[in-house]
Amino acid sequence: MLDYDPAARDDIARMVEGERTCCAFLAFDIAERMDALTLTITAPEYAREAAETLLEQFASRSQPATAPMKKTCGCAAECGA
Image 1 (cartoon, rainbow, N blue to C red):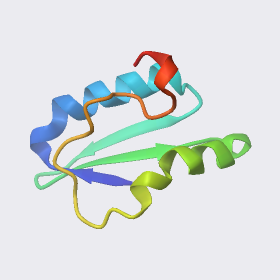
Image 2 (image 1 turned 90 degrees about the horizontal axis):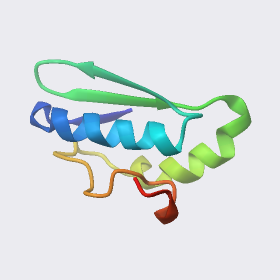
Image 3 (image 1 turned 45 degrees about the vertical axis):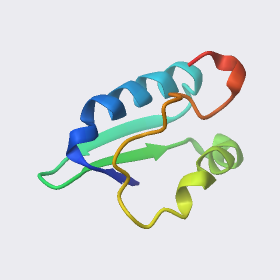
């Protein structure tokens, strides 16, 4: 789960759409609260290793992010997202 400032709603939605395009095996859920948007990303068991590699960059975050990175896809530079 990743927490973002509610002001980042549009950026998060764009990021999720880009990730859905290139990483269709992942499931994304955005829950809105007054103080944060929570993005939950899940993967099927068969994709555990790939998902852990993709998401490990986020594991060390201890504070809510204010916005996603400019590039909308984290899986590969070649995907075009």
